[in-house]
Image (cartoon, rainbow, N blue to C red; front, side):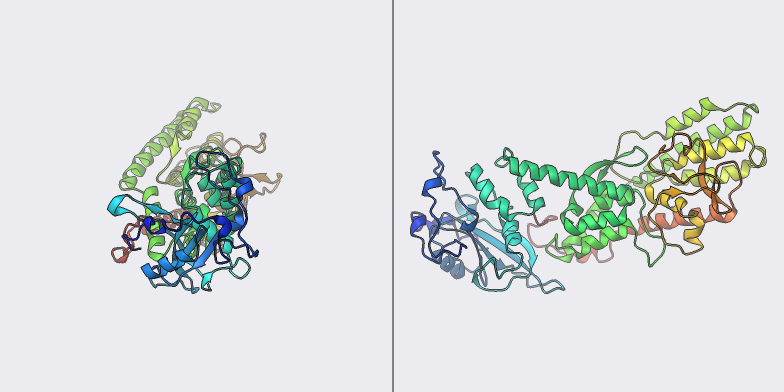
Length: 514
């Protein structure tokens, strides 16, 4: 936009009466005369006319050259309009869309920003759109007319604003995310309509994060199909294990290690990455990749591996203490004091914002130590092996992220790794002689509790309730699964090879559509 073009050029037309506007005015109403506003004008010092939803016009201009802008202003004397024009960047999306910008006319005057020599037209980006036509656009013949108008209007603050303007103009044009964003502005904060939209939108954010952290991939994608803007929202959610976790949907999926094992598989992380890359939330692919890299970097910042190593050492020390207590216990000792210290060690603490949600290596170490001490602790169904299996290994499994728990519900890691089974998203365990129980939510059956009465690793096709010995292949499969997830995370945390080639337009810093 030419920065020398200021709102002063409209002074000659600002005094024009709205009631005398010609048929080329900003009204998109089918009526040939402009709607009257005199009877509904607010009695205030500002004397701002009350707008109705028909009074914002949508124009498509061929460019934003000075002559084009000036000529369009003459056609909208005294009116209200949003003027669209192609961005100078000629690149288009694969679906033929093009990036558009918008400027605004209100009461016949240009909406401007800046002061003095810096005064210029207020300009916003509405991202990539498919728009056909020229001049005044019609809502009947222009696809996504209200959405496009809402995208533009939601990015400006109309001053002064009155409740009737809020109720009858922007609100009708905006989708839920745009309404929620407007509800955070001081001018809109007292409006019940916008506060309700903000509340509803926040509920959707929380609902999506719950789907992600609970491993409900199908439900998460269905919600994103309707509300793709949720991909960029941060929130706080509590998972099945009682951990409080903060982040975007992608960040929470990364922390849970909800990543594919098979090349032709799509788990939560892959689905969210696909959704981000196929969305129109950003103006171009480069900006999308910058946002993805930014989210990953926030989840796994510099030094996160060292923090992970500290946690692994602390977890390992706590595990060895409880094993030592079992080893030295008398035959009838239930080792409750040592077990409680171990439970306290695993208890969630604080809000998780970075890194992995849980140290899955602890479970692998427990499997290996269980096998090492199996004969020493008395073999099959001995008291010490039962304690170790159900109350140590089982209790560790209470803290597995949902995607890991789903592996153990689906005939165990061997079925995924060696039988090439893709992950099924269910959380029920079937026992040979007992009713089906839910892995999550925890303690859904108070008489048969994970970490107290059983631990889910398949022995001969069934979850074990007593101190048997899992096969070497099953433990090895879990190790392979965990290593694969670690490798995927390591690849994602590396800067993309072509990152240096990503160039953004001037004054753009992770810009997104509103």
